[in-house]
Length: 225
Length: 248
Image (tube, rainbow over all chains, first blue to last red; front, side, top):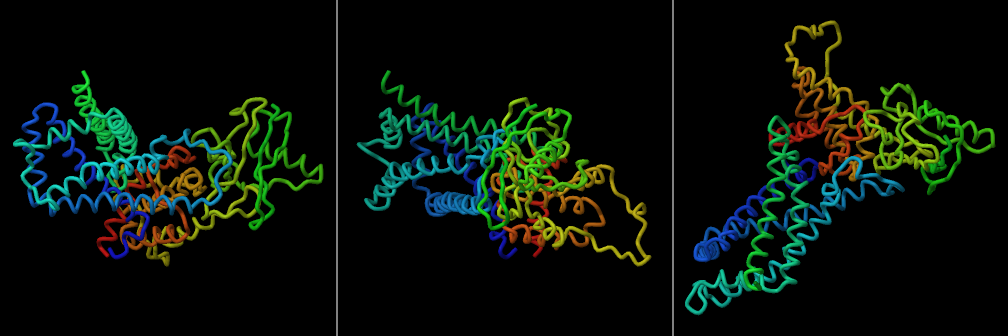
C-alpha cells in the first residue's frame, strides 16, 4: 500500500476516515456540552474528567489535533489539485442543475469552520493549556467550586460571540450535509444501506449543529431574560 | 425559432479562443442540436467564414463522440441523452444558447468545440480489458455461472460510451465515473477476477497521471451522464482500489 496517499482514491479515503473520526468527536463533544443544559454538576464532573484524565490529554488530544490539521491540510491540497484540473473555466456553468450547493462549496464552508476552530483554540484551548500545564493548576477549581460551567456560561454572554458561534454551526451543518454521506461513498460503502445512511447523515448534519446552537442560545437567553 | 448562439471559437490548440455571437433563424424544433449546428455551418460556409468544428459520428446516441457544454451543462439541458439526441424543442424562440467545449486540463482543445479525449483511451489501455486466449481454446462463456444480478450490474457499467460528460460536468474535472464504469464491468464478472488487482491500480494510476481532478462526490457526473452510469460504480472502484492497495 505504499504511496496510497499519492493517489486520488487514497486521498479521498484519508479525507473520509479523518472526517468520520471528527464526526465521532463532534458527537462526543455535543454529548458533554448538552449536559450543561440539564445538569451543571454533571457537566463540571465530566469536563474535569475530560480535562485531566491522562489518556484523553496525552493520547486522544494529540490524535484529535492531528485529525483536525490533517483534514484541513488535505482539503486544501485537494482543492488546489482540483482547481488545476480545469485551467479555463466555463463562461456559463449551471452547477445547480446537477449538484447541491453544499457539495460544490465544501472549501468555503470548510474555511468558515476553520476560522471558528482557530477562534475556539484561542478562546478555549490555549487558556486551558495555560491554566493546567503552565500555571500547573489541575484542580479545575475556582473560588472553591468547579470553574467549567461558569466559564461556559460566561462565554455565551456576549451576543456577538453567540451570533458568530451560531453562524459557524450553520456552516458546519452545510459542510456535514454533503460531507457525512460523501465519506461513506469514499470508503466504498454504497450498498443496500445507503438510503438509510443518507437519511441518518441528514439527521446528524442538522441535528448536531442545531443542538450546539440550542446550547449557546439557552445559556445566552438565561442570562438576559 | 430564432436563436442567438454564443459559441467558443478557437483556431487551434495554441490559440487563446473567445466566445463569438451568431444569429440563426428558422430553426425547426424537430432538429437535433447537431443538425442546427449543421445549418449554421452551411450559412457560415456560404458567407466564406470558417465553419464551427465539433465532434460527431453515429448521431444515434451510442458512439460517445459528440460532446458540447450547452447552457452550462454537458450535452445540454435534457437528461440521459447525448448532444446528437438533444432536440431544439428543448429551447424556446428567442433563446440565447451558450455552446462551449468540454473543459478539462486532460481534454485539451484541438479546435473550436473539438477536444482531445485520448486520455480516456490511455486509461482504458492501462487495464480496461481481459487477457483472453483466443487461439481456439477459449472457454464457452455459457459454462461460467454468473448471477443475473451481477450480469445486470456489469451490463449497466458497460453501457458507458466514454463521452467525457462526467469529466466536463465535474467541478474538479474528475474522471472517476468513467474509470469506475470500466473497472466495474470486469470486477463484477468472473472473467475479470484474474487481473482485478493490477487493473484497478493501473487504471487509477493512469487516470491520475492524465491530470484529472479528485472526486468529491458532488454527483454531477451521474446526473449528466447520458447513459445513467451510477455513483455506485465509484464506490465499487474505491473498494477495489483500497483492497488492491492493501494486497500490495
